[in-house]
Amino acid sequence: MQKSLFYRFSQFVGFLLGARFFVAALLTFALYVSTFFLFNQEESFRKFVFDFRVHGIIFCTVLSILAGGIINQFYDFEKDHIVKPFRTRVQSFIKQKYFLYAYLALTVISLGVASFISYRVLIFFVVYQFFMWFYSHKMSRILILNNLTFVSLTLYPFFGMMVYYQTFSRKIFLMAIFLFLILLCIDIVKDTLTKSVDKSFGYTTIPNYFKSKNTKIILISLLMLTMAVSMKLIIKTGISGFMSYYFIGGLFMMIICIYLLLNSSRRAKFFTLNILRFWVFIGIIAMLLNGIEGKL
Image (cartoon, rainbow, N blue to C red):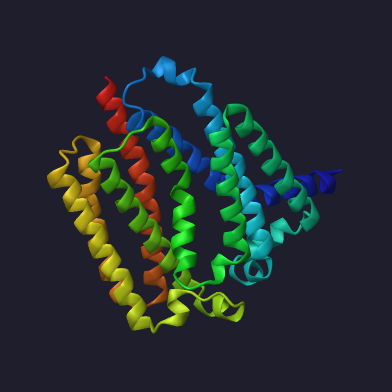
């Protein structure tokens, strides 16, 4: 009985890891925070809570992200055996065919709910899910396109909410560029840590295509560009409150990352990756606090 419970629990954890549940949870939190405090400039909190179209869109987004995580691990299964041995071991408690069944179920439910909201929302998610599959199937192996597509797919739901609320401004445009650049740096740094494995499995990435020196130049250039965007936001958009502190602090974080990248050790790259990931999370918290302060 004890073994059976442990096995079922392992299956459950394996499914959560395979579907990238924790990534989906973080993106859901980020979507709600950005939707209410950034894109939604007019509605009251009460009206937002009862806007079932918005909740429906976010629900479809979550299901699509879970489905995308499943199909991605299906294509990367052999590579993950080397890169992520613990996660692969836990996922092995579930047969791959059940992951595929879950992928189909999540996709159908997501598109079904989207069709009830509107045909435009349905088209939005058909495009989203197609490119998530196409990224895993083909584009993840193509130089530069793999990084650009991954980051674009991460930001795609936020773009959808921005269009839904028709919130277009210089500040939001610059914030989107800032986030795009940070996520791009994260993806490239992550590729430097799996350079040899990616090459063995036919993934052409910036680190295994260019020399280490050129990869370092690309990353440092992107970080300096991120700093320039951050300074533009601080000086030109009148951003205030917690978000201003976030972008000012971001300048120092980028300098630390540049310093770490000048050291070519694996440990320095690992620290850089986690600093950038942590700073994205801090950005969500800063947006939340800034929004609460603005609503009071």
